[in-house]
Structure formats: C-alpha cells, structure tokens
Length: 118
Image (tube, rainbow, N blue to C red; front, side, top):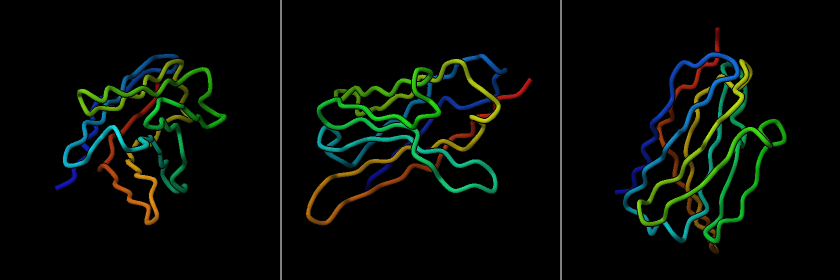
C-alpha cells in the first residue's frame, strides 16, 4: 500500500520559516519525481516545487528564492524548506509522487495546513 505522509505544517508569522516533510512508503522512492503542491481556500491546486530522481528541481515563480525542495532517498523522504513566508503562502500543502512511464503513476498525500498570519 502506497502512503505519502506529510508533516511540519502549522501557524507561523510573516517572514518566518517552516520545513515540511513527506515520508513515502510502498514505492521505489528513488525512481519517482516528487513534488509539493498547495491549495488555498477557493483556489485551484497549484504546483510549488518538484524534484526529479536525479535531483533536478523546478519551482513556481512565486516561491523561487524563498523555498527549497530536497530529497533523501535513503529515508524515502522529500522536504520543502520554506523561508520568508508570506500570508499568501497560506494553503494546504500536499506531497505528490510521479513515476514517469508509458502509463504515468501518481500518488498524493493528505496534506498539511500552513497558515502564515500575525
């Protein structure tokens, strides 16, 4: 059974930092492109950042220079370090695993709430 379990969300003041973690099980983690998406109330789910199996990263324009995605294949965990947080970063952050293949395979975590407010 595949599981993606996020942790690390919470309430933080503007300008603060949080580190999200996503622990994966049931997949050959090193083969997957891992990503973080967020969804704010009343809005569509949006890409935040991805990291491929070889470590190449991609970021949404809105988070470049503030957020860093990384992975530890031995721990089967992907991280999102979020710095200089803004109120508009408030959202549910979900972990995503994608196996590029003839028939793409995708898995989602349940999400963790991040609230940026004073």
